[in-house]
Length: 447
Image (tube, rainbow, N blue to C red):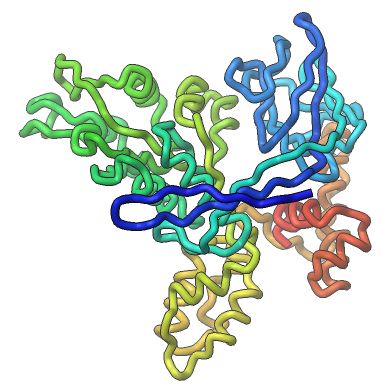
């Protein structure tokens, strides 16, 4: 069963597009476990965090469970469990795994706690934007229209938002759209790149400094917090924030107060914080490289920007956006055909470079292509001929077994992809796997 309704709002000057609300009945997973406090059962509605920290979506009271332990990702075929660098790991079928799909009726263990999975039919509301554009972004794919609807919804709040996604997906555009759709739109949007400067300069850039506060501070400087008064501060590459800066940012988020470097005067801040990263902050927390309390302050709401390969049908609208007019020697069809053959490791940023290069040259010339264009992010290098892992009996059994399983998984998938001309649906049918799982394996192995 499904039905649709809409929501939206108007401003003084223009009508804002509405988002449709699609009501559907879906099979959703529940996780059940017991501890000293009794029996618990939680419906996993989205990608959620399981851990012992009170702020996690699924909080398990077990001293052997890390505070941020693993991610739960619901699919129609089971619950994906991904370890987030926990101390004691995730155990499925007696084996410690980095990730596994646990089907309905299955179990997994974290610390000393065993959790079981059952599925039930749930009525869910899903917001989808009613237009193919939001701010400077375009996209008619379902993934992007869901993102647009989420931006519109969060823009009506003052929550801190963490934007996650691969490099080149357009995280800064999401931040700008969030700011421009909010009540703070008439005030500045300040951008701070946390990866571009050392700690002492970053502190001065954010908070400002008094004259003479440090060598070279010849004049008093207003920081981004002051310059963005009433508006939004976008902290780009927040995963690179030095550990020494993290408690200072946390204090600002918690108390809405700060001091310029070298000053004793406490100042009030009136800004909203939006941050972005291509790294997994949850793993950084477990590695001791990022404060847990700061993570939860920044990630009150999370927006995940889909990779270009996950945006079905968006290549055409993006090419039209980047190239409204083409030189006579270059056809739109040729441009799209070449674009559809690439994996887009660099996402939308790489696509724009590809289109700009084609326009400048007047042709789509493979000789000018980026040699890594057909590789996925973090993909392993292609295996050399006969590249099966060595049978090294000096290593633990689990290490050798995992290496061989990885090799078998990749070779099996690569062979099926070749046989079926990279038709994912055909590969899934032949292998007896879900299409979503096949897509994940393709990304995992860089195929």
